[in-house]
Image 1 (cartoon, rainbow, N blue to C red):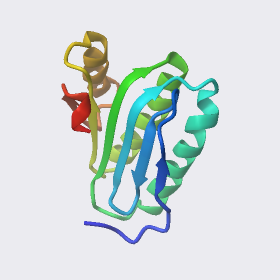
Image 2 (cartoon, rainbow, N blue to C red):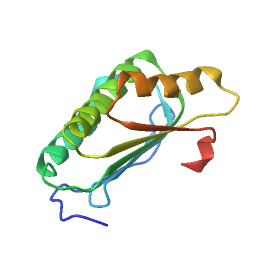
Image 3 (cartoon, one colour):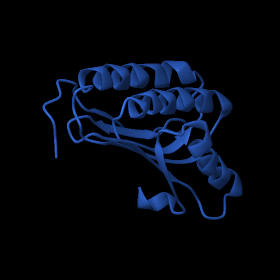
Image 4 (cartoon, rainbow, N blue to C red):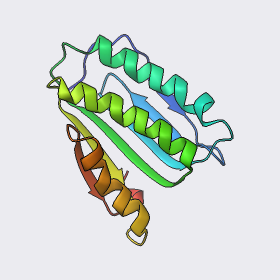
Length: 138
């Protein structure tokens, strides 16, 4: 089901150091896929965070769930910090009684990414975190 959001979708093609991004706000589906190690992580992620925060404020009365799909084969520490800001934003929205689902896709042979995904449930308890051992499934 879609809503009547005023926030336009965001679609960014992947580059050698940034992920593909498709934030379809009307469908309440956010997706990031690829690698995230931009030289300036804040410059890449901050506009995305601001758009999500504004959309969530606009959507505060909407009862529909939000889905975030993240399939990053690699991300550096500065990207991790900003990803955590995004997850925290959605966690706060979920704490307000809005269902939020985080689908964490990882390579089945990557123990570190698998553990990272499992720890997200502890760090963001209001999010419904689903680890998925298949990067290509996103």
